[in-house]
Amino acid sequence: MRDKTELPKVSVIIPVKDEQDPNISRCLASLKTQDYSGKFEVIVIKGGNRAQARNLGIKRANGEIIAFIDSDCVASETWLSALINELIQDKALGGVGGINISPKKGSCLGKAIDFVFSSFLGSLGSASLYNPKKPQVVRALACINSAFWRDALQDIDGFDEEFELCEDTNLSYKVCETGSKLLFVPDIFVWHYRRDTIKGFAKQFFLYGMGRMRSILTDKKYASKGAIIPFIMALMFPFIAVFFPLLAAAVVIVYLAAIFVTAFRSFVKTNCPRYLLLIPSLFVVEHFSYLFGMLYGITKGKWKRTTGNSQIFYRELAKEV
Image (cartoon, rainbow, N blue to C red; front, side):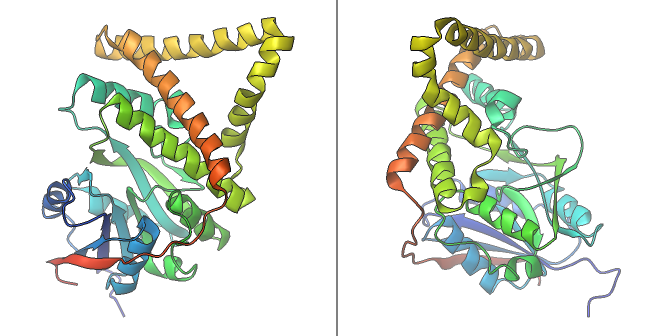
């Protein structure tokens, strides 16, 4: 039995597509500088979808706590210790997570994308993107920056491998259904090297939209008001524009006003005039990409299990477990 004063052993799991992942070396380097005084290991899994890869990592892990980070992220020196310290404070917690932010030395477009991600209009209700001021209990944590008790994951049989996207949301919901709580802590962060092109940004939200719709079709519990109401309103807009043109005009005016007010706030904060045009454009790209992704998700239907060949290709006892 572990002594009460001894910190729990941790396994950090990172899924990658293959050994040629261009970001993994940077991520691993950041994990070597962690100030966590307990024992931890790092496991990198290649192949399969993300759910399959993470399940293999959980199966092979030696830690009492499973931490997740993505290969295109860099962990701050205090990342792991902050997650674990929060998790062990409350026995009712099944998991703890934080935000992901762009590095300070990014391009102008990259910083604008980060602002859109972190705004209320752009985060689509995700706490891991939109940064609330205080820690709060949430329904879902993103596995880009989170840690769970291993027992909590094993009790629900880990990730549902049918989910190629939104697998972390599905996992979070299942953990909550067991009675455990999930805590989001805004002070715990990783630097996320996001796609910093318009095309990459649009593709990312298209995939988010597709993943959300396929998840809704698979299980109705994903049909949150934040996802369904805007989708239905967007589908109804052509009808409203034809039969209630004044109402449609009012909706457009309110939408554009909200976007430009948010853009002006970014200008005041950064003193960058380019944001006044760039950020409104990004909001439009994001929202339409997400909408088209949801429409495409309808044509794809429910998630179906895919065959995968996940395997460990890197394992390091950063501090012996």
